[in-house]
Length: 274
Image (cartoon, rainbow, N blue to C red; front, side, top):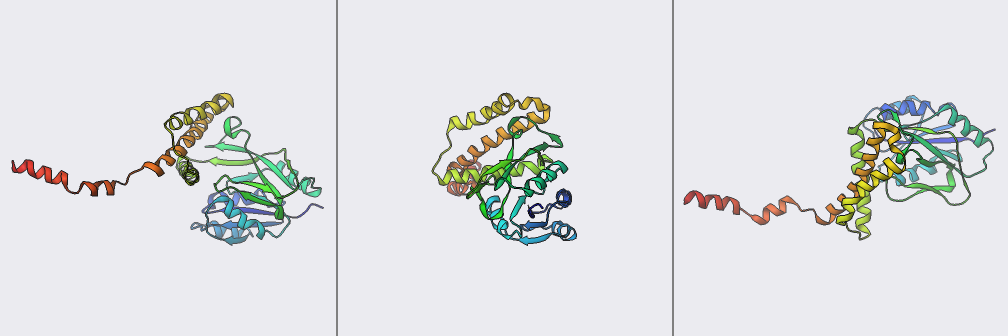
């Protein structure tokens, strides 16, 4: 008989995605735990309607929030599933098989990322994987950014064959604020470490990152969707350095204006009097 499994779904204002995400795991999850960080839409109503247990707390970073939620799982095995992700029937069957006779203490799951509805099989997103299935008491997220990853305190990690579906970007309006947040968090970390933005870095990081994904990792095989993904990854790389420069060198226009006092107005008055 398979070991029992808790599926944890961290979310905030995800009512549009949540129903489908829960439906994808309902057949094999022994507990559905929704960890909410302040939803103001119908997310919690959907979770209650579908029989989920709900826990709530403020969000600081992704790893911090998930580390708070993981120990609250009832069962030994935990699967972390974001609201914009789906477990396919094939992946569900593989997870059930693995839990019937676990050979490892955690398992990496590859994701099939989608950009505006288009699956991305190459470039930076093509081999994306996350350690998402693990024993509750052995795993914690490590790292201060939204891309913190799970580390096992002991034991080994295996890999699952089947992929998880991830609707990474559903619109530019949804995705661009994420990039800004990722860049700002990384720039804060670099700033605390004493790093500084360099001219050459700002000039080269974006173009080199684009060439790496579009040419070396065959992103061009994903067509126009792949082109846009590589541009966005390159933009994020540039934006991190730009945000670091902002922390060191940005000027407050209010302070600048106050330092000039009323000189432009006085100068104009002198010309009028003449």
